[in-house]
Length: 224
Image (cartoon, rainbow, N blue to C red; front, side):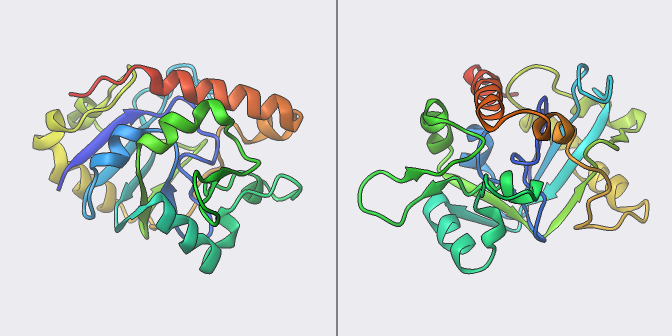
C-alpha cells in the first residue's frame, strides 16, 4: 500500500469528483493517476489560500483506490452505470455540471472533449495520466476539512506535485487515525470549496478560470 498526499489548491468538485457513490480522480494529478494501484490511498490536503481560509494542515478528502480504469474504460463505465459523472453544462444540478468523464471515446481516433470544466489546453496533461482512480471507500470533507494530528503533519506537501515515498512510515498510522474516529465513509461531510464561486459566474468564465488553474497546477511536478 502506498500513501499519496498533495496540496489540493482548487477543490471544485471535479478533481476529485465525490458524487454518485464513487470518488473518482479522472483529470488533473497525472503523475498519481499513472502510478497508483488498487489498495493505495490518495489524500488531498488543503491550501493556505483556500476560499475557507488557511487549511494547509487539514484533510479535504481521502480515498482508498478500489479500482483503476483506463480513461476509455471509465468513459464506458460512466455511460453504462454512472451517467451523472458525464458533464452536463445545461443542468442546474452542480453535480452534473462538474462531471469528470470529460472525454468521449465513442468515435474513432482521438477522444472528443465534452463541454466541461477543462478546455483543449488541458488535454495533453489530462491524457498523460492514462488512468482514472475509482474509490468506493472514501471520505470527503470539502469546505469542512479535518485537522491532521501532530504526528501526521509530515504528510503536508505545500508545493506542486505530491509525496509518496516519504509517506511510507505514516501509511498505517494515517489509516488508523482516519478510520478510528467513527467517521462514515462514502458520505459528503461538506461541499466543494469553490462551489458558490463556480455557480456565480458564466460557463465561459468558469471554464477559462478552472482550465488555467488546473493547467498551472500540473505544470511543475515535484515528487518525494
